[in-house]
Length: 301
Image 1 (spheres, helix red, strand yellow):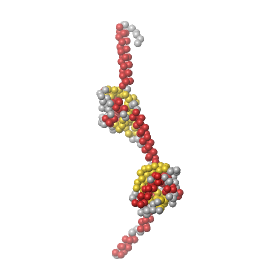
Image 2 (cartoon, helix red, strand yellow):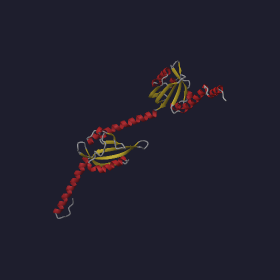
Image 3 (tube, helix red, strand yellow):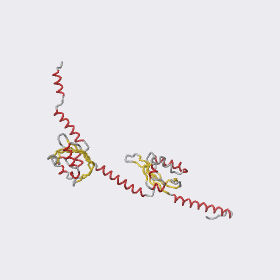
Image 4 (cartoon, helix red, strand yellow):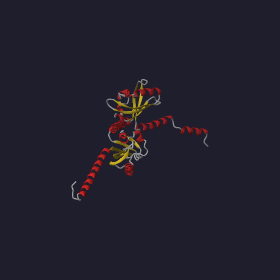
């Protein structure tokens, strides 16, 4: 039978020694350090935080900064990255070193003669007093955001001043966006149009609703249409003719974002066509009457 003394000895023998725990922790940290996708740099404070020198630098950081770890270990951060103070990161290092409170340096642009790009940093102090910066190069994301913003601004500038009435309709048939031309064409404001729950049926002249209801449904299903003519009833009750073209919109993964409509007021043209048609009909009626009066003799128009 095992004595209490034997049990106690086995208990202590099963416990991991502090040195073993430290080695295990260091091994796990090294695996994480080398395989994380973010850049990680470790610094040693000098002269009570007046300077910070590199003590480690992972492979992701090497790729981001286009520099090898061997080129910077033991060097001052300001020597390797001369823009670090202007960037604001050096002050963060000093505060974190003195307070032990982690800090986040939001996305900012770093630039020196060697490298430039948008960086986002998280800074921590280890129990050893060393400073760790975990950061990401978000330059591609920022470029995409800027390009998207520029594209949106260009599109808005064009759409706001184009003569045609432009509409972006969601797959649910809800209006997502429209330009100021809506007021000129329909008499309704942008706010009024976007609040419509039964767009576009509520605007279509009742004699064209069946035909255009089918066309609108096909647009929701991803079809393309060009210069489809129909009538709409304005807010003031006036009936006008319009021609509409539409195209589907997809995101970069092929998912439907709805469709875009471009609508032009063609009332003046339709009136001219109707006047010409009426004149032709009147001319033909007069010719038939003249033929009847002359005994159906051949008469050239």
